[in-house]
Image (cartoon, one colour):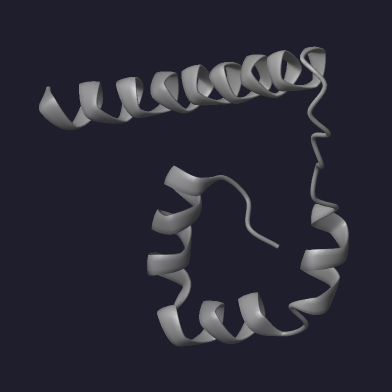
Length: 74
């Protein structure tokens, strides 16, 4: 029961944090602050074989467990 609810509410918390961050960025822009958004695709492109190497080190079972919580990792 605890594990089920911990996962459920962790995902809800992630949604809340995303909404708060978005609203905060909008408010900062509204009052004149320049808000920059990172180009995550360029970051991922520079990672090269980082995820591949860690996937091999962790093994398939551990990687599946990680992705079950973090979502698909490229």
